[in-house]
Amino acid sequence: MIYLKKFELLDKEDWSGYPFHIFLEKEFYHIEFEPITIFYGNNGSGKSTLLNIITETINKDKKTIRRKDNLVKTEYFDRYINECKYYIENDIPLGSKMICSEDIFQNILQKRKENQEKNKQREDLQEQYRQYKYNPIDYTSLEALSVSVETRKKTQSKFIKSRIEENVREFSNGQTSLEFFDKELKEEGVYLIDEPENSLSPKLQIELIQLILELSRFFKCQFIIATHSPFLLSIPDAKIYDLDARPTVTKQWYELENMKIYYQFFKQNKDKFEVEVGQV
Image (cartoon, rainbow, N blue to C red; front, top):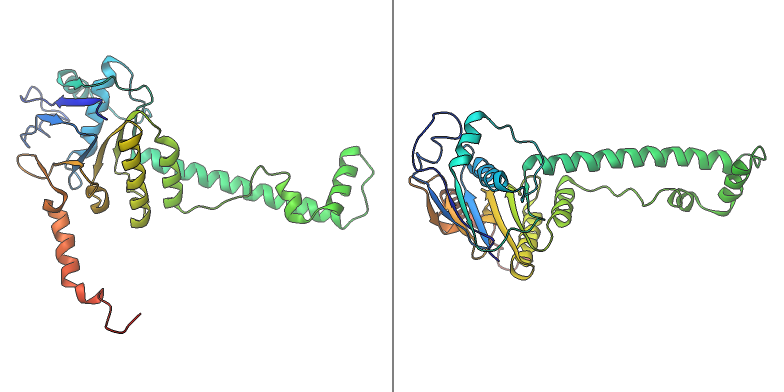
């Protein structure tokens, strides 16, 4: 599904402040989007800046793409986006959003805080269970009597489970990030995602790719992704802009410099991965 069809960056230099110069030096003025479009480049190539420019340019007309207010804008940034233009093929759904690295990390920290609070609650309930279970029945109040009776009917785990909505479930940062994407990415939306590979292992990156492909193919979603992950770059049929190239051009994933470096590295160490004859 294509909602955002084209985007035009500045093809002239009016001011010298950020983000002027960044894309002019790359001779990068015109973007055409596919259902999945990727901006590739090393750190400092302007990937994240480009996502911010697209989001803010669209939102200056209508607050269509949700994002957390964590972008530090300058006078020059506002001037720049006022000169940019975009063209849509279909109306951008209201559920569309930009997801930054900060959003992912904040979610990880929030989940960690929730787990710590539940662990503290669990420890308090364990202590309460022991006090009521192994001491004489407390008749001082109806509530105390009720707890005393309950501890004699339940195991510690069932007692705690009845008072905590769900068991504390510890996730790795990667699992928490993947759970975050599964929750945030819904059908019918434009999603601008900045380096989604952060905190994701290769295995979890592949799972994220499957989620993105399903949403793109069957649930009317469009993705614009900034990444240098070799796994995400290999998403089938993704249109890739190489922001390291002068001028910026589209390339196949296997033509990108970093991908060639990975290839050469594994090629040189090929023998370490080969299974010897007769070895299981």
